[in-house]
Image 1 (cartoon, rainbow, N blue to C red):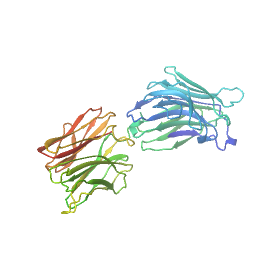
Image 2: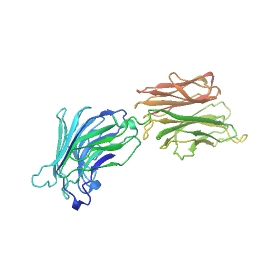
Image 3: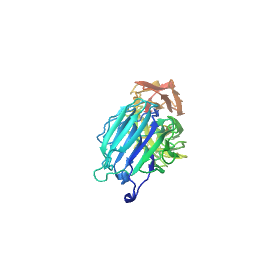
Image 4: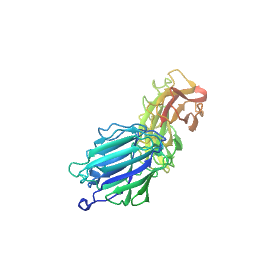
Length: 440
């Protein structure tokens, strides 16, 4: 949240009761990205208890209301007048959809001639179309007066800069207070790295305030660093380093293990920065009759990195499959970072797709199928092929990393895909495993 505040209080017993507050602003362009976010742009008044009190607001809103018992709004711009109560419930006037570029005028005024007595008219009007959301409220049954005024950008569910409205900021103009003369103070309660700021353009009556952000400041969905390492069959772990240029990246690791002589093998991933790694998918293959079970395995792990990484040591480890003859097995990893992804829910709502050879089948082209429902997406895939030959990417894909029979690839998709075949090709047939996924 970022806002400006006319701090008429505390302490409340020296406060000057305010009679009205009004201002105007323009509906900005819609957010470029959709992550279920809610954006509130409003002017408001609050009683002397400040954060614990009640708040009346004239609101321009994108997304669904987050307050209890006020079920209005969606992925579009709309206006409404609100009373937010101390228990986080609310009262709301009629919600009207509005258009980009419309002029919004908000006003709050007491409507009892002999002292406000807590009775207020909250009016949010689109002067371009004439729609008008009016709410008459008794602001508080105990403390009946308003002492503080706000100009606010409040957000919920924003996970990347593209979730903000396009345009870089909102200017609130013609801010008028009766019962006092505002001297605005600025406050940025949460800075999520998208250039949030407050500029007081003009003090007094009227006044003007700009709440700024950068909806294009975040990186676009794409790669942000990669590296790989492969280790011999005398080892049970393999380490590489990863550096990134952006904060809030999603880190992906494909882990490889081949030619084990045990019935099972377990992967794990760790790193020097202390990231929390999650196992997402795994597939095995090469049942060549040696052990009666699959001997090659491929897995996908992921983590979030709030900070930029500098030569972070990322280690893949195997357990339960070290051979008696050599003390380990062939193992390795390919690790890469994706910037501009949804940091809260980074994967498109679909399970990671996998593909592998059958007991007797061996191919030179590998394929895993994937579908998406929440673009834009970066479709990624990792492959392990027993030939030791370098893989070639599928049509439209670009290699991320490759070494021997292992590799990874990616392709950006602006729209959804359905049962997309994600493939690699090799110059000869052999046992193989593949995992495909979609980061959004």
